[in-house]
Image 1: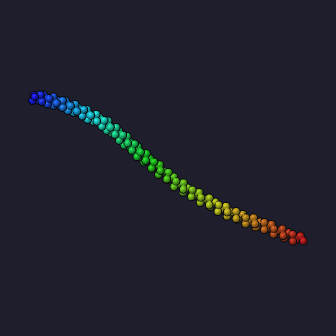
Image 2 (image 1 turned 120 degrees about the vertical axis):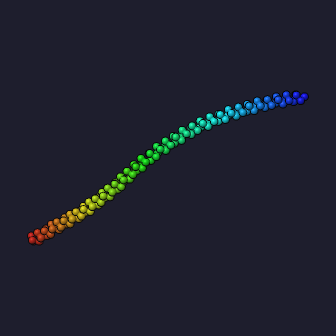
Image 3 (image 1 turned 30 degrees about the vertical axis):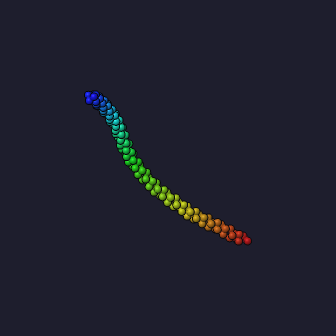
Length: 128
């Protein structure tokens, strides 16, 4: 009977050893699969990171270019504002000159009419 137990124990031990080896092999296969998946994911992340760096670099260059263009546009706005102010000053001056000339013309016309009126009075008075 003791040899029976020993034989059973030996078979159980062999079965457990076989199951342990199978479990170990499954664990190795699973670990290898996970390692490959992680390497693939790491490669994807590296590629994405490289793309993001490239995009960031491109955006930085574009940002610099836009800042330069903005500076140019701001300079042009300053120039246009100055030109507009000068134009408005010229228009105001021209309007003042025109107003002054119109006033002088009006006064001359008024004097001329007054002289005409006065000369007709004298002519009419002498004819009597």
